[in-house]
Image 1 (cartoon, rainbow, N blue to C red):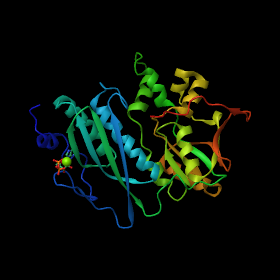
Image 2 (tube, rainbow, N blue to C red; image 1 turned 180 degrees about the horizontal axis):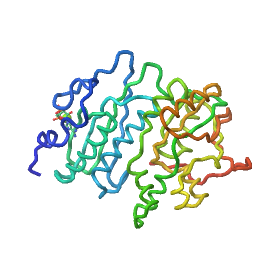
Image 3 (cartoon, protein in one colour; image 1 turned 30 degrees about the horizontal axis):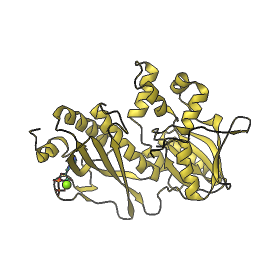
Image 4 (cartoon, rainbow, N blue to C red; image 1 turned 90 degrees about the vertical axis):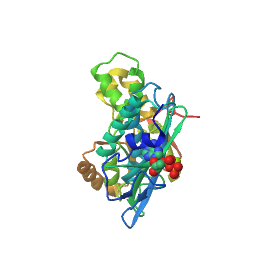
Length: 318
Ligand code: ADP
Ligand code: MG
């Protein structure tokens, strides 16, 4: 409580993340100054995480920090942008130095790991909430948007789906090895930055899966004026999720569970080979899960080609 606002910023946030040439002026003035390479567009995305809504109120502060930064970097990944810097708007109920030290250490670790320094922010008092604005760069006109897909393009996802949904089941259960994997998937999502950058000029559309595959793929189909068919048996599932939930529930969670932060992207027929090479270069596993069609809506088919009704439609806040 004795720590003033400026001491707090200096102690816990100044100089967080390694300096880069793109961040010409960081924390301490009225604005930060960024110098993106000429010919680049600035990609900007903001995400707020509220205690008790987006993460459990008593969660480890370093995990809260890292998860919030990674969630924002995932949006840059989905556009094919590379990180430049990020802004942090922090609302704190009190000045708890143990909490701040752990939060700052977690944030510093990932800021360094993703080469994305903290460029500034705001600090206010109130119920705990963390807002991060990620700033990235992408060559003009090359960003991966939601509206570029065409009928006949194949739909791919990176990694495995449903793990973060599985983690919600085990958050209160006693720890085990499989649970550790799922919890890690929830707390430390891996923004697919390398994949996103490699997919520029190859994928026709992309999105990161934050609210569940059905809902997020639905954003691509709506923006592109199309529909999609998903082959449910092809969804990539982790062994840990199948062990926890069984095959059928794991598939349902892969379709509707949020918080995985994998990429869903679409590939025109002529770009399949380039995509395979690009994903090999990024060392990212990808799985084809269906295709885009001209009839609107997202259909789910079982192994014998019959329609499946999916109960949930992903996590919806309202
Ligand atoms: P102003 O009143 O001009 O908005 P502030 O007093 O809010 O300035 O902030 C002073 C400096 O500290 C600014 O450079 C701002 O970006 C930075 N800052 C404030 N809060 C944070 C935070 N939580 N994390 C990082 N930088 C912060
Ligand atoms: Mg301010």
